[in-house]
Length: 57
Image (cartoon, rainbow, N blue to C red; front, side, top):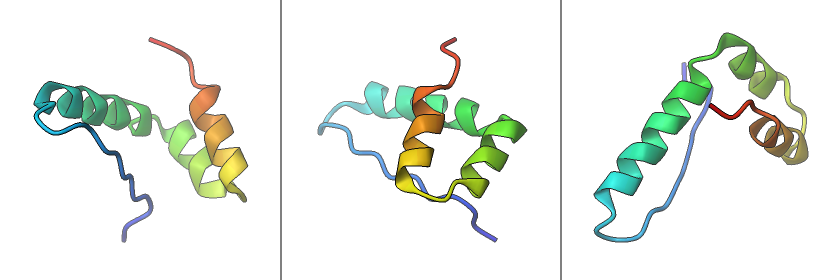
């Protein structure tokens, strides 16, 4: 079953930006704790907090 749906928009003709963004999302969601936190979030604010508080690599 689908647990997460991600929508992101990049400017036309920005293929590299699209790929970098997709790769970043894949890395972010590869972490089990992150996925669990997102699944348990009760509001949009909680979801935004999870994205904002992630460690920068």
